[in-house]
Length: 186
Image (cartoon, rainbow, N blue to C red):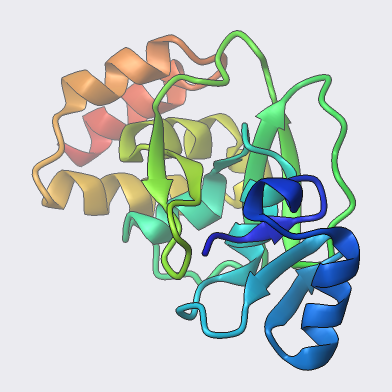
């Protein structure tokens, strides 16, 4: 059975009251306010589950996405999640940092991946090229060494600079510092 929210409980053949009784009886685990998972479900990242359940349009970004792609050695303290600018940021119990990205560039580099430990629950994830471009674009926030280390790791794996420049061209403030870094590294 999938993750159950109080909003989709009826679709799963249960009710809010049955969910509450199920938690007391040990059949469900409460992940966060209004989000439940069967106790026999496979282990999964609860922050990812909560982000996807709260906002289906959420996309894992910045340090969390770089870590997922293996482009940084840093372990993010929180899950970085992007939403379209103008969206309401949901209240969450998990360690989630919400970021608002421009609506016109929001879906560039978006991939949909399944969340391990769930039955079909998915979340958006920016591809490696978008993550590197965002790291250069937001280098003041992430640190100046992070994007260069990610770029170096990506190039060592055989990344194609033309694909990266194509993505960076579509994002504000990303192309110029990225081109400078590529010239220095190649």
